[in-house]
Amino acid sequence: MMEDHLTLDIEAAEFIVDLSNVVRNTSLGVGVARLSRFQGLLDALRRFARDDQVLVYAVADRSLLHGAGLSGQEEAVLQRWARDGLIEVRPVADDRILEIAHLRDRMIVTDDAYKEYHRFHPWLVGDCNRFLSPYPDPRRPGAVAVRRRVIPKFPEWELSLVEEERELKDAGLRGRNAEQRRRTLLGRLWECPVRDCPLFGRPLRAIQPVARFTGRGAVCPDHRLPLADRGRAPRRAQVKVLVDGAVVTRFTLDEGRAVSVGRAPVRAGVALMSWLGAYPPTSMSRTHVELMCEADRVVVRDVSTNGTEIRRDGGLTRLSPRRWHPFSPGQEVVLHESTVLVLSGRRRYFNEADEAPPPPPSHVDPTTIEGKNGRITGSRQTRRRTRRR
Image (cartoon, rainbow, N blue to C red; front, top):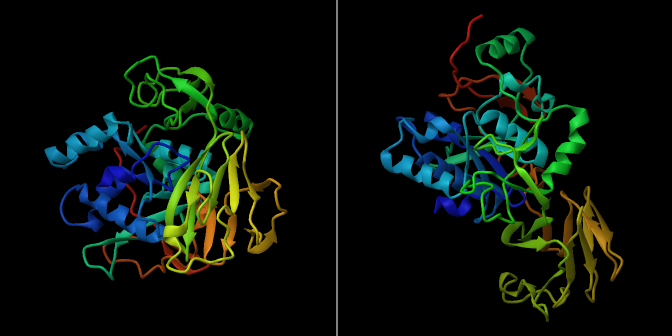
């Protein structure tokens, strides 16, 4: 079911999906907006991530839930997802998507080039790792695939024209001086004055979505009211287990509690035996490593018989036994040559060779630039109501 892949836990989410952009993308199917396009995208992301349980943080324009060409049943599904806190709904989703992606370093799945935000988010232009674009899969008729894309640099006059077409909305705290404050605010638990708020209402959820940050501090993105600070949020991190390059399971680390991982830990932990085949590697101990989430980082220690290595920037380093070592995004804890642990929800996890980009489909109105892998196709821009001087 589609809702099984939805989460507002940004630590668990692998991707941020521009839901309105995907559902309205007619290149992914004939006719008007269809929710089935989102199902096709989820299937594509499962293949791309090699993870059948892939999780996404989906943000939608409010207009998608009413009168967007969806059937009454599809609108009811979206409204239920919003009510249950499975998706985030904004009057305009674009600035919210960029805000979350920048704060939490996630890949964005969209065809939009976000021209009106280039001055506010300089990182948009030329980033080779941040964006994925859905397209009809030529190898699977009727299916969707994803490929990397690079947003090109547009001329100044073109950016100015787009800025005149719509009033820029405040996307929250911006600028170098606000960075530390934003990251501090992200680690708090928040309560909305509207008690039945699906995002920050009572009872408070240990797993909350990302709050909105303005000059007033933290604000509920749904009700636009100041949020009350209810203390520091417990640190959480999610770890994925890869066997032969494919994700087989994942588990969550809660702050201050060590979790054992191995073939079959003696105490409660993560047992990998069922994913290691009929002849599990004897070099992997029953309890091989322990991991723990601290206030500001994740740490790992080797408790095995034969040792553990950590892969950083392509090189392997052997862990000192019985000592805690930092475990950061983009690194791999190697239990065996076939079995590694990685932190979930990080865009640099993927391999450039995961999806070879085919030629641009003929239905796309492309903006192309020359990238290191050849021609990279941009996207048709969403048409917006113009505002004249």
